Length: 353
Image (cartoon, rainbow, N blue to C red; front, side, top):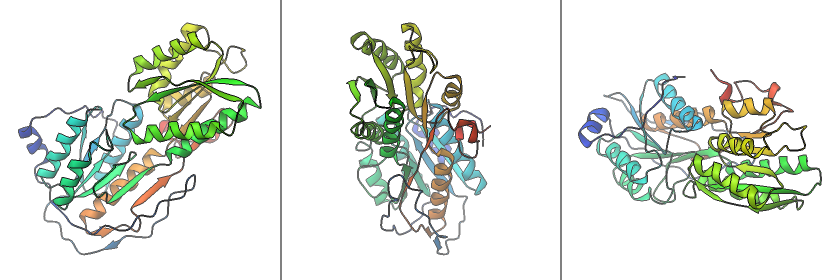
């Protein structure tokens, strides 16, 4: 996997045309949706059917990322690009850095240049729909990765079972509490990101099975790490006995830990001051924090597997192949002190070199 960082590209129409020149259009029929059941392994697929589709030009796949600010999204972007190279294709990876307008412009440029397929990690599931519909009219295949797209024709969608991710975190805390009454802080992140919203919804669903876990605060932090820090400080001022904190992404763990340190509550699991922390993604810093005792659980995503499958499908579309399923849900791995030493880089992307 490449280790290079993909900077957010703010390019003019002329520069984008140069970057994407040579993309070739393709057309392949879509199939009916078959989603994997929640919490199960992804739906298995047999070798895709193939129709002869000679390529006069190299295959070029557009990749529109919501952001690459987090280690998790950077890992996904790197994996997509590496798989494209392995398959003899080129991935044009652009990052909108949470700007819907920028992502619309980036996807529109890919459409104008007639890329073979476009993979979208949406900033806003509804806001991206008009440009998706434009791609549909041009016969360009659209693939959604990690986050949903709320309209238009999405030819293939792949993501983590995010509801299960949230439920798994609640179950972990419930089992750790062992019936003890504990107050819970849930940081509400970017409401336009379907994956984050589903993790939060799943967490609330999971809490219903543990009435001893009382949700006392749900501050909104958007995408801001600064707001995560301030929201944690403010929540403890109002509710000083909080013992559980859940956030839907690893990127907000560091500011939570900084806030707890300032409050004198960043302590190991054997300390009475210990506050349990859980998050979703699986980056190395959070895995290290589990070993150190300053984080309790990470709901790890199979980012590399998801990226590889998505790019394989995109390149397959360009070759005239039709996948056997158009929707896939991938399971999560609950990582804690009890099992972290049994899991290696083949399971946890955050441990990969």
